[in-house]
Amino acid sequence: MKATIRRAATWLVFSIVVIGIATGCGKQTVYPVSGTIVDSDGKPITELKGGAVEFEALDGKSSANASIDEHGKFRLTTKSPGDGAAVGRNRVVISRAYIGPENPVQHVILPKYENHETSGLEVIVEPKNNVIELKVERLKR
Image 1: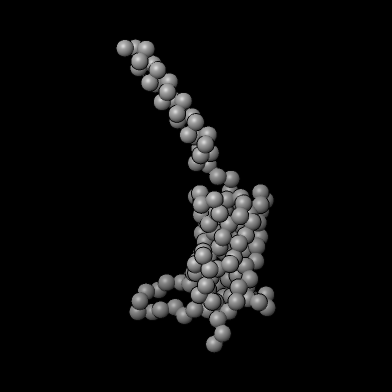
Image 2 (image 1 turned 45 degrees about the vertical axis):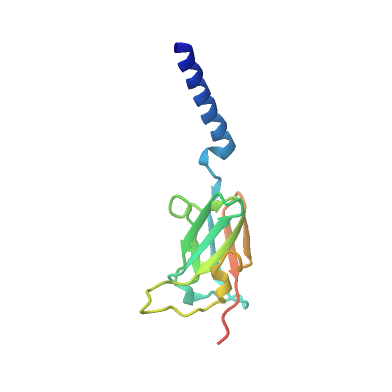
């Protein structure tokens, strides 16, 4: 009986180690990412204040997000405030602020930027302090 329990415990520990190695123990390498959202003329889009930027790793294992400030700037967070995003290729979406159904926020940039499938925005996060510029098209009025 003791041999059976010992074999079961050994198998359990072995399985946990193999799964941990295969999944990277849930740890992702994250580096700081900050930036500015600008229009085609390179001017910051300040009307996006209160909106959000989201980076989604192409491997689907992590995402990072940030609020957009009054200067069109952001600093991404994955687990702790301002820590950044996962190293590698990330697709990006930009969402407008949500105030509520009574006060809808007008679109300032093309709505396509609010969906990962249509935004066309992709950024490579490198193992360094990343400062990026997201160039988007304003909605024509």
